[in-house]
Image 1 (tube, one colour):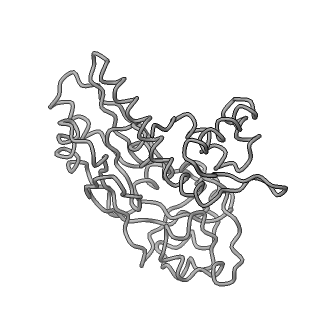
Image 2 (cartoon, helix red, strand yellow):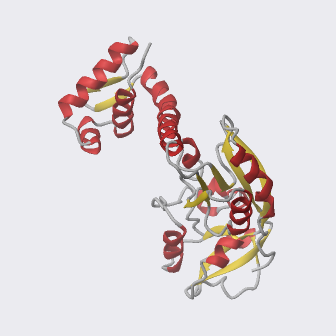
Length: 292
């Protein structure tokens, strides 16, 4: 059976929004046309994917399964288009994704020395897309911070580094040269608790059920702004804290807080010579300093 990727993309929008009107606006098409495309996909598959009733739109079990599957499929299709388009250009292009605070210059220079004429491009990533740039083809390799979803990827450990807590300068704990995890038990963490399991296991707001919602945060800059105004604390790699120094926040080492791991990741299905050579030079990345 041939499945139309456009229909899958339309279905994904409705499944994520659970609202045909909002999905149509997102896709910039008319709602009736969107409804027809989703019905056509259901006819192609011979299953019901969505049900609409007075309460709104809900996924059927088949629809929930397709939503789980469709993201990687659409990303893979985008990656194919990007790589084929790049292959048609006269200049070879190699794109390296990297997380904030990581200096990739040594590895990029070493790769360029091995391949004169290669156009090496850099793509800054965040926690939400450091792996997605590999799946959809925006980057050939990505220097990532664990944890990540490693499905379909090869991952090469590069180095570990300390993590620190970032506090506003007027915070009662900011004057101490070093802290313990227990000192942070009463603080509000501006992150997924699972990202800092040492805090999660003792956090008062999790034990009492009083944890307030954390707004979506898309960058280190946003996170530090929230810390500076007293909205909470965050735990970040030392190299990131050093790179984003600002006068209204301070970074402090925390005893009992495990290090962060930096790795090189790339799609397991790709075996290009450029990726192979980058895995050779990536370990030359200078490790971050060991103290704040």
